[in-house]
Each structure stands twice: as structure tokens, then as C-alpha cells.
Image (cartoon, rainbow, N blue to C red):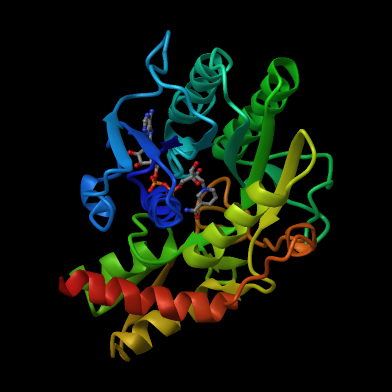
Length: 313
Ligand SMILES: NC(=O)c1ccc[n+]([C@@H]2O[C@H](COP(=O)([O-])OP(=O)(O)OC[C@H]3O[C@@H](n4cnc5c(N)ncnc54)[C@H](O)[C@@H]3O)[C@@H](O)[C@H]2O)c1
């Protein structure tokens, strides 16, 4: 089962699982995901799509599942600055509802949870390892994911299934529907003269292409040994906002764009809760045989090309 399977990362995961001949049920309320995102495998006999909302109390699963990949969430960090309740309901409560339903399954072996680098807050150690602490998120999104991680860990230990938690860096690629590249390209489509940049442009983070991300998740699930295991998933390097903006402008042949910086805080963050510098220690997942094929810059470049060709369809 894949919750959020009609979303950006979820649809790539479903493609990969179907390609490996698994039988998959997607569980999605289509709040941000679309059926079109599954067009490559929608006709597969091994795929079922169930339009359901995890916020539904007394959620019940009417089939047995061996693995649940839980991706459904509201992933917009910025939403928390005006409406923190969204992250509590969509992320914490929805995860609790799913875990309550999951613990009643007879054959559940593994619960996979997609978490985020933002659970570390403003880490003093970069690259940040999985055992970094204390974990003090600075956004309600990060807080909601850390709370969900705790629930996943407790349910796995209490009800006898395995849990694998992945803390993702910024994931980019075809079909991405939020985040910096999507945002900048959308703005440039509307106005090619002036571009609003959130923050001072120096924010420097790790960006990973979704193809590398899915490969990492599948290897982590396959090879993890502990009852509750946590893996960072990111690139080995970082890239800053201005470099990303320049790559996008160059690829779109836009050389005279005026940049307008919109700083949410005096120290130049893009929004309240924006972690300005992020890089993850990925040695744990690498020790299982995975490594990212693309650097942050290569991932950005490939994503821009993918989104351009997607826009032409
Ligand atoms: N994209 C990233 O850079 C990134 C980074 C770190 C972590 N993550 C995590 O990875 C997961 C997937 O992210 P994404 O970028 O693909 O997001 P997305 O918004 O594209 O996908 C989320 C999917 O969940 C569905 N959904 C949302 N609420 C639901 C609910 N209550 N019930 C059923 N379905 C619901 C949406 O319709 C959508 O299809 C999320 O948990 C996100 O927090 C993403």
C-alpha cells in the first residue's frame, strides 16, 4: 500500500514498485496529487487506486498489506506560518489514524515512513547524522514529522512490525508540484522581467533527484535490519538558491531578469521556519550499497529540463 501515491514522490515510487512486479494499492485523497501522475501504470492489473482520506477517524483497511509506504502529508513548510493546524491534522493525526488501522492487519511486516531533514531543526553538525540530537524542529512541518516518527516507532515496537523511516533532503524531479524549482519556473512563466526570490538567496541545501531517492528507499527497505531503522536520504553536496535560480534562467534563455529578494526574517530566510543550511550525512544508507548518481547541481539541471518538457505536453 502506498499512501500519497498520486503525489510527486509517491507516483515515482508506485512506478518502481509496479515495474518490480508488486501488487500495489494507492490510497490518496487527491488533495494535491492527481490520477494523471500514475498514467504510466494506471492500466496495470497489479494497481488499485482508492480515493480515501487518512483524516477519516475510525479508518479501516479492508485488505491485508505486507508493506505500507506512508507518504501522504501536507509537505508545504510555509503553510505552518499561517495555519499550523494543517500540519497537525494532515501529518500527525493522519499518521495516527493509519497506524491504528495498520496495527489490526494480520500480515503487516513493514511500515515505511517518509520524514524530512527538517526534523533536525538548525543542526549544529553538517552533514547531520541520523543520531544527531537534541532534535529541535523550527517549523510546525518538522515538528509534525518528528511527532509522526515517534508514533511510527512506538507502534512498530508495540505491535510487532518493522518500521523504516527515511529523512529526506529536498527531493526534485519530474512531476514535482512544490518547492523552489517548481515555484521559480511558475513565477517566470507569468513574469519574465522580475522574479521574486524568497529569502536572500544564500540558503544552501542538499537537493536529490527523485530517481536517486526512490532507489535509496527501495534499498533501505530491502536491507534494513533493525526493528525501527532511520536513514538520511540526500545528495553528497549542497547548492544555494542563487545558483539554482541562475541554472533555471540560463535554461529558459532568460538573461535580463531583475531579482527581488523577499526576506521573511532579518537573517534572510525565505519564510519563518526555513532552515537556511542543510546537508545530511548519508553514510548509513551508502553502507547498504546505495549512492546518489547525481550531485545537487546535476539534479537541478535534470529537473529543469524534465519540467520544461513536461510543460510542453
Ligand atoms: N518533496 C520533498 O522535497 C520532500 C522532502 C522531505 C519529505 N517529503 C515527504 O515525502 C512525502 C511525499 O511528498 P511529495 O513531495 O510527494 O508531496 P505531494 O504533495 O506531491 O504528495 C502528497 C500526496 O498525499 C496526498 N494526501 C495528502 N493528504 C492526504 C490525506 N489526508 N489522505 C490521503 N491522501 C492525502 C496528496 O493528494 C498527494 O497525492 C510527504 O510525506 C513529504 O512530507 C517530501
